[in-house]
Image 1 (cartoon, rainbow, N blue to C red):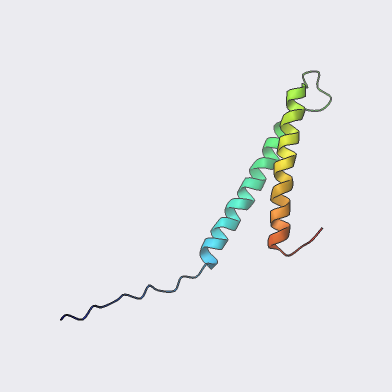
Image 2: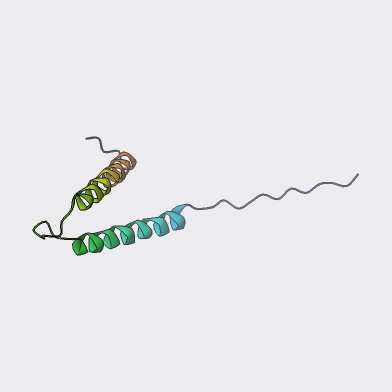
Length: 77
């Protein structure tokens, strides 16, 4: 009977993947800041309720992101 050889996968370090994900998160934050700066201004005559709805949805999602970051960092509000 032949002996079966098992392979032991190398231990992986999460550091590089974490660093990459961290850079992506920062890029997304910068992109969002630029896009918010381009949005219609509050004093514009073109402001519609749909703009307010969009901002309220954005704020709700950003609040969830902020909560997740706080939880990850062990911060409690």
